[in-house]
Amino acid sequence: MSDADAHLQALRTLISVSKRVHGSLDLTETLDAVAEGVVEAAGFGLAAVNLAEPDGEFTVVSAAGSDEVRAAVVGVRSGADTWQALFRLADRWGDLYFVDHRSGVSEDLYSWVPDIEEPVAEDGWHPMDSLFAPLMAPDGGWVGVLSVDLPVSGRRPGPEQREILSLFAEHAAIAILHARMHSELERSRAELQHTATHDTLTGLANRAFLRERVDALRRRAGREIGVLVVDLDGFKRINDVAGHEAGDEVLRVIADRMRRHVRADDVVARLGGDEFLVVLSGEELAGPLRDTAVRLREAVGRPIETGYGVHFVGASIGSALGRAGDDFGDLVAAADAAMYRAKRAVRARPRALVPAPAAVPDGA
Image (tube, rainbow, N blue to C red; front, side, top):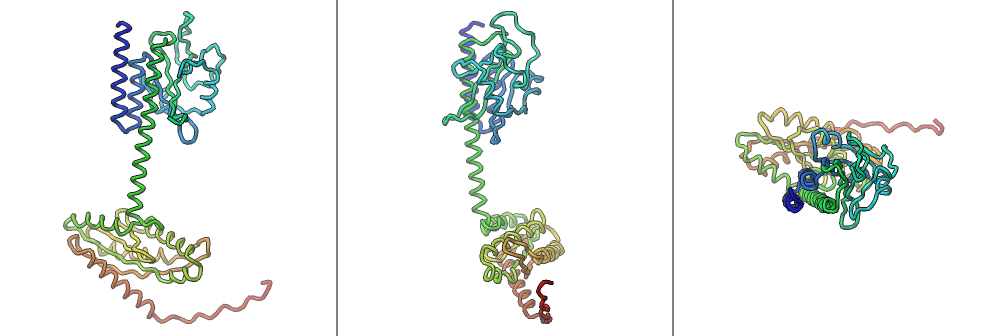
């Protein structure tokens, strides 16, 4: 193949990689395309993409070459100080950094050294030679390093080969930034969705999530729906005596306890204030609905240790059981009425008189 044909083939490969970089939002896929393009178009036996991690380490996340070479380098981690040491020893080739084995580089700085013979020719590629291309963000920060080894010619790359490598490095940086922006966007969307459907204080489902869940359950013909309305007893006193910060902490603890005492598919929602709703679905729910109520009542009634002291609350719980086609509002109203009956029963229950504790002498 002539030099002109080789150059044209390299440009075609670069265009193909560019399409994959801009057409995919998956970081691994696009970096694989970059590494494979470097091997194919730039003429190296190994191309590896080292991704900068939040902890300052660099990890080889993608590599192209033989199966043996990829297995040896993918997943290898190195510190930023290692790369800085290599770059200090390197010669600048435009945007690239070349580390000549004669520069006194320590083998400890390498995570992998190819098993090849030392060259006879002056410009031959030595096993301790290294060539790197920093992957830079627009603000000048490093997002990674593209490293290559084993030039197919067996010689140090010339100007054209270096230019192709620099172009691929630019596309690798674009791929990383592109994928990270997409991940950040998806994370922001997920956070907004969570905020819209969950209570900000407790992290439990809110009314919006509850509506979505109920709509989905109504489409499952034949299934039963169980509803528990849970209202806290004695919570207002915590707010009045210890303050709203203490009350908020109590609510968070109770929410966590309730989450841990329902089944994986059950929904626990906070309706507001100190009122909660639990929705169960399935078959033959009478037993599970009753057992869940017992577990929740016991869990809520345990002492709650907070930064504002130890607090005690109880739970009045009402239940209702229906089918998927029943009006959900009617089920909630029935459970709510049952809850108020339970609360009135607690208030009407005779209370034993408990004598005040005897005074403790000073120094006891």
